[in-house]
Figure 1 (spheres, rainbow, N blue to C red):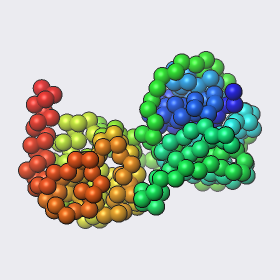
Figure 2: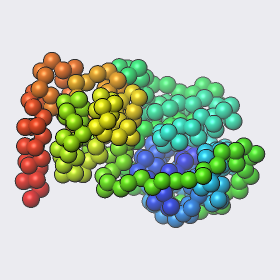
Figure 3: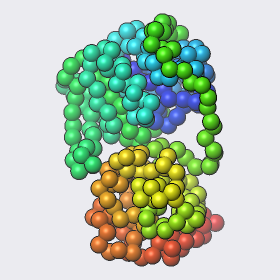
Figure 4: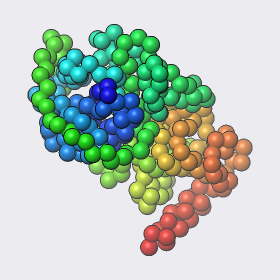
Length: 320
């Protein structure tokens, strides 16, 4: 069976959920070969093997920490040359898409970004995408070279499928460009205890209707009761009520959780583009004509300041 390269997104050996989802998709089209780079790369092997990786190629070097994406591209190209895969799968993060694009250019292949599903076709992997502000769903394949595909988080379930997971050292020769852009400082992100927005199974977002930064506390309280991430519309972010890093929409982050709750969000096309692929959508808005209601599975016409606290209390009661 053909092998499929899977780029591993991990933090000091802790594998992030989108990578495990990629392994699920990779098994549909071949045998997954994981590529883990940087500090703790070898520590990823047990988890990767548990989720279907037949081999784990590892390499650690200071370049992965000290410089931007080019060292990782060099390593992924080395893995590509060593494996001759049927496809290359990369998590669809900002960094992941840059790595994928640079790799596709180097190997002379087509690239598909932000796939939400992947199947095996007669002429190669077929990717499903949500395009044009989520107004259409397309199915496409790469017609030139070995496909490089980035996949959005929450596109597939995480499924255990134990495999050999043999660990092999990857030989990497860094290019001259690898040290062109150096990281000079880092500022740790303030921990909130909430899941990463793009990876969360549940997202609770607030919009213009929240009417102030101080009122986002009711959005956060509901999110915390649900174990959810907190999102915000562009209007709320532009008003300075919530950080840009939490913006959901065409100019923010795209999310595809199992449950998306929109409170005080009218549903402009820019926002819908970032959350329309959510599995279940619930909206709370006092305007019965708000466009968001054209999209939802469940809609509540009412004041969010009355509805959201009641919802939070009901969840607390059921949990208790």
